[in-house]
Length: 373
Image (cartoon, rainbow, N blue to C red; front, side, top):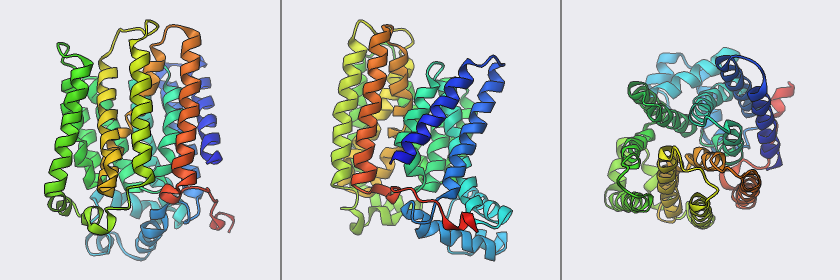
């Protein structure tokens, strides 16, 4: 786990330095996305196939198919023909570009990191460096396992960022691109509903949270009744099969419930504090509701691993929520305490999730021996 924490600190430092360099905003923005995405993608490409369950389970197999089959065959009639079209293109061109597994993993990570970093930096006018730090500690390790969904998650986050900036057409395009990388991204459609609910000024945040919880429960009921049918439409029947109904339970459920109480309890206290600047609360409401929805689905992984995967699409909005609240704390000492507490809590939770429970098999991080050949 220490590898990911060090990586997060390095990228945080790079972003912080770039924020204070006298350059045009667009140049700093582009340099930040370029440098950090290259670092994250290089680390992803250098990993051994033992890092990330799916790296060996389908990543290596996909690479071997890519370098041995022409594009049309890989695309239309290989074992991977059911994959979403854009991820097949990324795999094939990445594999054949350098004739190395490193390059396929590198390209997939670029596709994940770039939209995520753009979304964080675009949405968080202040403290984007803190958002990047949180993203790398919480979500970067899991991207080394769920490679295809990680790309889709990045584009869903970008779609929300564009929506928040009132770029509706661009947001729709980003959403469609996400679906074309991984069919399950269609689940992210709820960001649009939550966005409009959050922007209703006549309704309190308490009522909005209740409505969001009701939506989560309604989604759970729909899943219980029609989960197999819906999953079969996008080719993910195994996630809701009986064999996987226990896989997402145990530590995942406990982690989700603990996160629920810690996150919502702390944020509710801080936001009610007199030391919080109450201006511009729309992003707070939006990201809070989306994070709550993610935690609900994540905690319900006891029922099925599929709900854990759904939860990740929405839980990722905590990378916007936590820094946003911190940036609105006027009292400097309180702001520093908040950031330190949040970092310590996140590192402890991620240590439990990745290191102790062994989730996603991304710890320990091992460099591939092929790099030295």
